[in-house]
Amino acid sequence: MSLPSWKAAEPDVDGTITDGSCYERAVEAELARVLQGCTNAAAEYSAAAGTLWHRIGSALQGGKRARPRLVKLGYDAFSPPDNHPPSESPGDGDRVVLLGCAFELLHTSLLMHDDVIDRDFTRRGRPTLSALYRNEAVAAGRSLPEAEHTGHSAAIISGDMLLATAISMAVRAGRSLAQAPALETFFQLAIHQAGAGELEDLLYSLGRSPATVHQVLRMEELKTASYSFRFPLQAGALLAGATVAEAESLAGVGGQLGLAYQLIDDVLGTFGDPVRTGKSVDSDLREGKSTILTAMAAAQPAFRENLTRLRTQTPAVSSLRSVLEAADAESLARKLAQDLCDDALQSARQLELPSTVSDQLHAFATLILTRGA
Image (cartoon, rainbow, N blue to C red; front, side):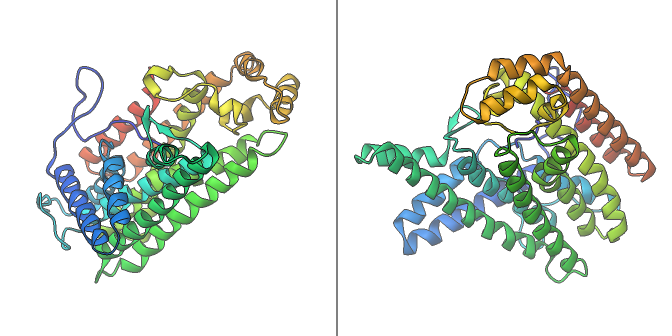
């Protein structure tokens, strides 16, 4: 669920967009302050909890902070033009920074839980927090199953702690504002929809037949597009004083971009370069994941037969990939992602957004479609 490197500026020569903006520095400063505060407070009543928070802080380092940027983008779409940028040391009054941090902590919380669901101990080529606790349990003489249980348990606890902190920050961001009830509702809905998407993803992997295109699109909208794209833009717009209808229109743009992102992620998960993506091109197929690729190939009898064999423990990954290639699933998925981005940008133009916001949405769409190229 990692988003592409994207910032509000012109692309560098390598295609990555960078900008050392005041807002991004403020987000980093606030995240560091909150995590240090949690670490210090936890250490007062539990040395183990203090260590856990320290490791959570390490897990947060190096993130692309795309979700806070989308909060700021939603805010900029409807904020008065004479608004001053946030300070580098934000307090409770800097609501945009607080809300951006809330979405970043929510994202990290969901990643912690996702690692447990997928039984992963590495992410982007690095050991996860769960791997650290697993390795310590192994070193203490525990069996591998016991050690893995320890690691996954620590990840669940970490995700829960982060989730509570994220909710608290989201509430603080809207405190005393007329939009506060709507902000709280949408932040809660982001959590609920992400959970629903994860559940559907899990249940689809148990069936002998792949999910349909409609089912996959709905699942991926819930699991990724909503909390990563739709709701950050929507919440930022509400914070700037947009009406619920205005914020919902911008959220629709984010939902389309988010879905396009996930479709490309599906493609890279099967046909990408593992060196560049940091993920295996076999894991989605081996685990029986329902992706846009499997949904598009489901009409092929050979694909359904091989998927059934795979899900009854007979290895058939190479056969599945061959059928996906024969069905031209990659090209079809990329075309659908392109259409979603085109529709999103067309919708954005109809909103008559500030040119800087429109330009950033266009740059984001370009990055989504060229990931892994």
